[in-house]
Each structure stands twice: as C-alpha cells, then as structure tokens.
Image (tube, rainbow, N blue to C red; front, top):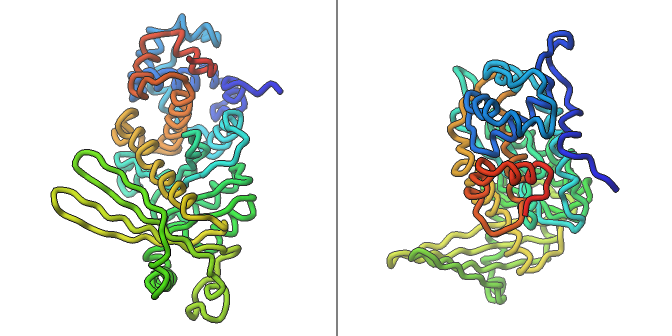
Length: 372
C-alpha cells in the first residue's frame, strides 16, 4: 500500500484565505515553515529569511512561483489556519509512521509560557507519546492546565489505540477518561493523587497492611551524577473491594479495574535519603515488570518530548499569542520532532537539526523520510 506523502497531507488543509486573493499557495507556506523549523528558524522573520536563501532547494519539491511570502503573511496564515483540522491531519500523517505492534502511550500536558497575551492564558497542549517508537501521536490544545480533564478525551478519540496501554498522571484519573480508553480498545494505567484522595488513601492503606509489603517487589536502580534512585514496584489483583460495597462511600468505580499498584522510590544524594510512594490503578492484569516499564515510559514524555521541545526547539521562547497560531506552531514542532527522530543514526537531535540546516540532501531526506 502506498501511503500519502507529507506534501499530500498538506494539500488536504483548507486555506483560510479568500480564494481569489491567494498569492502564496498554502502547501508552499506549510512546507516552508516546516523546513525552516527543522533547520533552526524560531520565528517568522527567520523563516522568511531562510526561505529566500533556500528558494532553489524549496523549488525541488513545490513550484514557489511567486517566491517567499513576507513574515506578516506567514504569521497571518498560521494564525488563521484551523487548528483542529491541522491536528487531525497531523494524526493521519503519524498513522503512516506507526508500527503495528501495540505500544505504551503516555498522555501529558505542557504549557508554552510565553504564548499569552493580556487576559489570555498561555497555550497548554496535551500530547500523546508512543514510548517505544518515541513518536508524537497527536495533541489537543487548551488554554489552561486545569482543562486537561476535558482535553484528554478529545485527544483519545482521535487516536488508534487498540492493544495499547495508556498512562496518564493523576489529572487523568477520571471514570470518563478510563471508559474512553477502554472504548478505544486499550487499557489504562492511571496515577492516583489529590484528585482522587480517598481512593489513593484506600490503596495506600491496602499496601501498608500486614502481609502486603512482605511480597517481593520488582526492583530497579538508576545511578548517575552522584544520585542513586531505587524503585520498588508492587502490584495486586485483589480489587473486588474497590468494585463492591467495601469501596469508600461515594467513591467512583472505575470500569474494567483489574489491578492496583504502588511504586516506592528511595533517592540517595550527598548522604541524604528521601522516600516517596506513588499509587496507580489499571484495567490491565499487569505484573510488576510491566508496571516498572510503563511508569518509566510515562516519565519519558517529560525528558524525551517536553525537554526536547524546550532545549532543542526553544518552545518556551515562542511569542505567538493570537488565534490558532500557537497551537499550529506546536503541531509544526511535533511534526519536526517526529521527522528528526525517524532519521537513522546515532547523532543527537541537536546535531540532526543542525545537519538539516547545513545539508539540503539531508533535509529533503527528512521530509521524505529517507534520512540515514
């Protein structure tokens, strides 16, 4: 089966401008912004400057018969572009990159701190991250972290999740979200904290009961830079008491619940020792090893997605503040990250991005997904 190319997906976007007034075709604008972002451009002035210098290269893929638009035109188009449709097209493109084997999918949010204006909240994007492939599967924008509860089901509804294990932090421990995950053919692993305080307390008491802590946990150890962290993982499939009359009064009953879990982390640094415990519920009959892998995979969205967006793509310096511009540029950066990660080789993401700026052949290979 021949999958649509990236340029084919760009052609599916609806142009927000009046048809008779379009001088610069939308696919050309989208390709310009993506290529310039891959090559290191961080605002539309830089995008335009890069495009003017690299016009012969761009014309190897699209005509660019009227040249490169002004930075104001780029800004206006990215602001006016339908953010929901662009996110859907991104998701359709990603499906062509995904492997068929089910994965651990981490859901988490990130705020772009400078993407605000006046009374407008900074952009907060909830992203889905395929842990094994290290691939951004999709995103849903909201204007505040507190709105993650409503944004997560919208994101889940657009994803192909059959067979996956979906991990979400405590914000997502909601019965509606759990049911949405199950309806998508996936299982959930949800953290418990203040938003489900009585349930978290009940699970904590369960694992603190005589006999429970005597079970041998699965243990992992990480040590670097003078810091040693030992994690111990416990899982219990004794959950009937959470689904029946023994559940705390008024406590929500999570659909498909099959396991509860605890992770105890002991950190040693500079002679100081601290211990913390986290609690989870799951619809999967998981064991301690899978719990450890899933918890670590969820942590990966922070240092392999959010950290890279900030350090490699300088996301926190983004100054777009109006209409759909911030969310559309967040989608562009997710697209650029997927392309860079898909390239083979051992070079860091930072080096790969610089290679895209230096080498036309490498950049074109990224766009066509043939980079070695």
